[in-house]
Length: 403
Image (cartoon, rainbow, N blue to C red; front, side):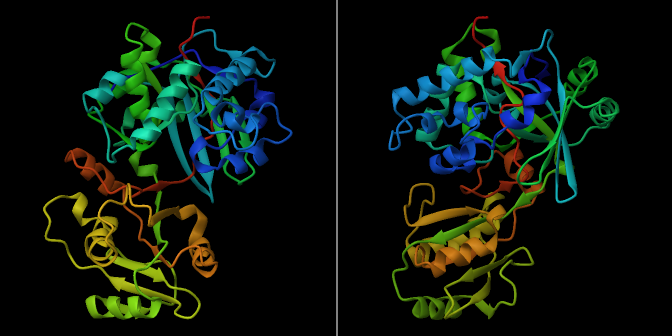
């Protein structure tokens, strides 16, 4: 059964919350982070993207980068902008994007649950990214950014969340991307802690590398109780939305016209009126202004796994591997990934600029598919899901340093 527990959050004072809150580390480049944080000493990007405060060109994995992030966190913690909760608490965190709300619980989950597969994964991690996140955790002695988890909805949890939202919020602001972020303190965490004890499994939605790093840090700091639990926001699956995670190919082995002919011989291909596929099993692709958008119908797989039935897996099985020689998208430099939040306009821009030869617009993976794959102990192909809206970093921080 799942374990969720309250914690003594390090958090911004309400009047500083909007200035502190930042996008997650992995959705912006160093250059983008530097621009976003420019003129804002309180931005949490100084903690999660600390290379922005070092000379341009600094290797983001250099020792001084990790040290700079720890220094930035300690400075914020000691400033007027941050306060420390006097008792352990849980929180409600609601995000509203384009009129659609999703509401979760902020608390600590157990690294032991992660190791025991009570917290289930659906993707492999890259060793280099896992190493990077682990170094940040061990250097900062903090879980600075929460993992996004999901679970099958529970009436008792829903009732406790609804009750907490009747009070005045702790934070309530609209970010520059127009996503609304509202946080409430839960007066009594006990009913929610008890209710999660009846939840069979939690599922990593967004944050596989942070989860894996937290489990590693827990082992390295065995005996430090706070390090054995990591920060998460837990959303009921019924409120989650997954956007497509699109694919681009940098270099085709043949000309674009010949590649289109090859696809027509292998698949049912039609010219497309719209760049987004409208049904499971259909992929749209773009070869440039001379060829425009087309759709192709993916064949059914004969492989046995649940993950093998996903559109992203079948694109790999029938197109990427046999036609382009891409057998492992995790390591092949000829394939790139573009989150659905950037839209198909970004796919067109990349192809029209000559940066890539072909772009594939995917139908989004369903949240039910994520849970089914995880329950079966299988793994999805890399970059199968893109969750929106993204959590803001810096609103609630879990530390395990000596006070």
